Every structure is written in C-alpha cells, then in structure tokens.
Amino acid sequence: MEKNVRDQVVDLLRKNKNIFAWTPQDLEGIDPGVIMHHLNLDPTIRPVK
Image (cartoon, rainbow, N blue to C red; front, side, top):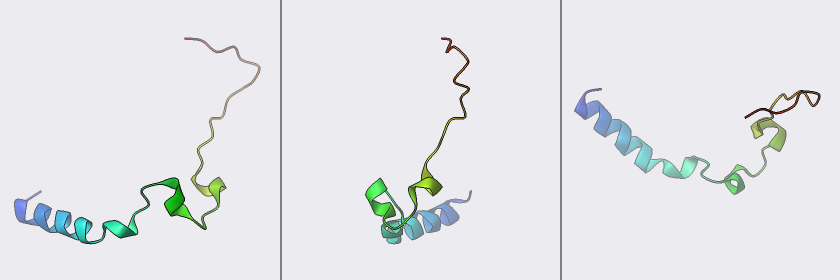
C-alpha cells in the first residue's frame, strides 16, 4: 500500500474510532446469539492432548 493511501486510511480510522465496538458492553442492543462462537463438540468423544 502506498504511504499516502496508508496515511489516509489511518487518519480515517482514527477520526472514526468511536464507531467500533471495543468491548462487549459496546454491543448494546445486539443479540448475543449473533456474536457468540460455539464449538461443535461431540460429547461422546474423549478429549485428547
């Protein structure tokens, strides 16, 4: 990426940093089911190291 383009992107991100969710509390109003990750594990299988 060219330096001037990089500088523009960095400037844009810094000016708009308030629109990003930085903590789970910032996601107020969003269903946790949408943002939670679940591992699809088979409970009949013994864990291995």
